[in-house]
Image (cartoon, rainbow, N blue to C red):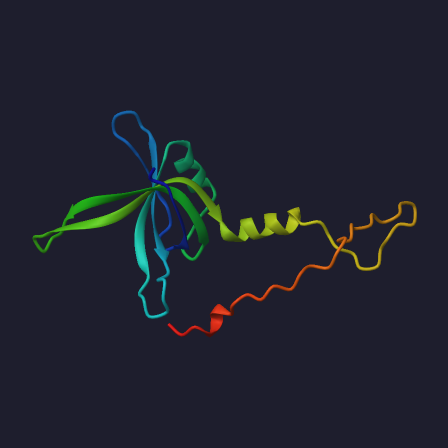
Amino acid sequence: MNHCILMGEIVESPQLRYTSDNQTPIAEFKIKIAGLRPDDSPSQFKAVGWGNLAQTIQDASYGPGDRVVVEGRLTMKTVDRPEGFREKQAEITVQRLHRIAEMQSMLMAAAPPIAEGSHSGSRPAASTPQPSSPPTNTTTPDYDEIPF
């Protein structure tokens, strides 16, 4: 199964074009992914969305600097370079694209508001069941002290 989820930043605005045979829309853009370690350089991937998703990407006004989560299939393309050699480049075929700011606002909207000290007197609070006996104190080794 080829499915990956990448979080990064859009480097180039999506460019919309159409196939010559049946005019299927294609949106292409570049995304920059941060390295795993602080000293790693970021990687850039070409991202491609097809069909209705391409139209949606174009209509949503994604642009450089937008932080996104991209879900899709990862493929390797071979490209002829002007220097005379062939280069392999990673490309992701986008299946879903989410703005990180939109995801954060959805999470904030889904979380119920917590009001301190606001209990309604009409309904008694449900009591949590208490354990019948206190938990036994078993000693577990502290693995944080093992040097690697």
